[in-house]
Image (cartoon, rainbow, N blue to C red; front, side, top):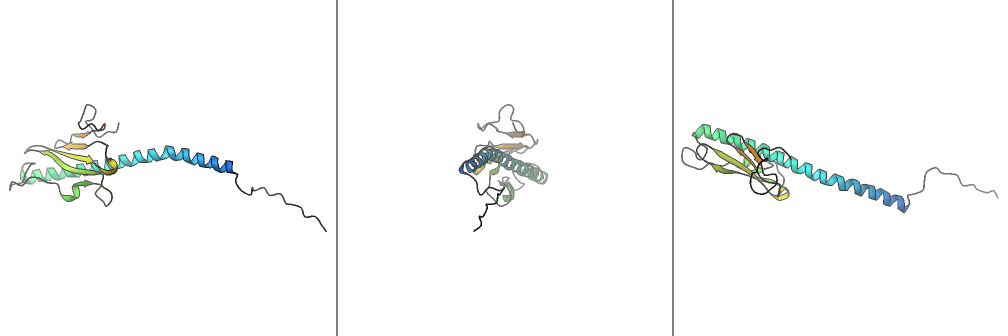
Length: 154
């Protein structure tokens, strides 16, 4: 009877438990860094979408003024209201992150506001006026303070 010799295999037959645990720890560390960054990026993208809708709503208000010679009501005395497609952001189908409203209007001025909701709650409101002055309550304290008179990120 001849002896059979085992052939050397350069490939391991499997992973040890230690190797598996090290791989899982590495994945966990990468995930713990990546997920908050992703969340922050998505919040910024939703905010940018709301800013775009506010600019569209401001353009609507300018057209309204051109037709009625005032911002607050039409020639028949009906108060101004934003069209339904400009009342929320994002405009496409999906979970809405902002409500867009005419915060204040007079015959010669207006302020539009985007109030965060759902997954964007706590982000602070955005505003734009008839002079296209922009503000973001970035610290979410309910008022526009010094340093918040723009849409710039802090």
